[in-house]
Length: 249
Image (cartoon, rainbow, N blue to C red; front, side, top):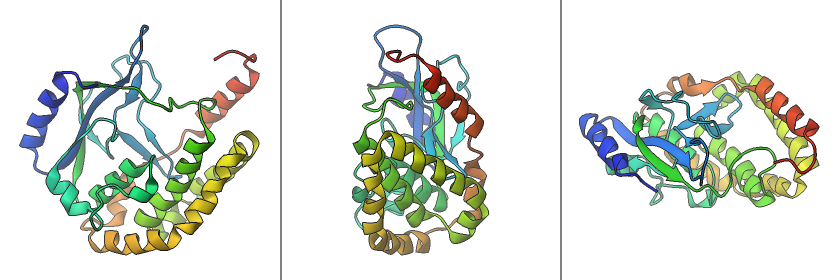
């Protein structure tokens, strides 16, 4: 749900900055009562190649009230420049249909960055998102995790470089181990995502050639967006959930 300020705030920024290909505002969760909770203020991409919505699940206390550039924007509510979409499309696709859902907007972010387009966050532009998957370790389904797992590998195959993967192996491998055993113990049906990804490797490699041939920005420039993953915070969250009495949300 867009507030009247959403487009009113984004369009002037897009008009003033021709290099900006995508914009978003402060996306909040739909809630009947209580404090405002953030859904997304743009995308974060970590060195372990896990992508998240910045601020997701946090109470809005003004911590994301500064406008600025972000790696990319959530496709839930965004303003995309048509010239950017035409520039980065692969064949006739702006969003990779074989992703089906989840991370297809991050794939678009990455392609746009490689072609020199910027993404902007404008906090005065407010919208509300009724998210089917609200994040958290207990609020997940096998179907969601299966697509998320599959698409993470497709995202890397299409956009990443061998050099960067090797440089960040110290971050990627622990996440691989952590997620595998997490899914094995909690949602084993989602592990079919590994098979799904393997079947799509030939397609992803064909798309990769087109993506990298059209890139105008060196992959090394994209590394500035890769952040350290907060493993300590995640481990504390897992411990909190493990110790929490059954029946508590």
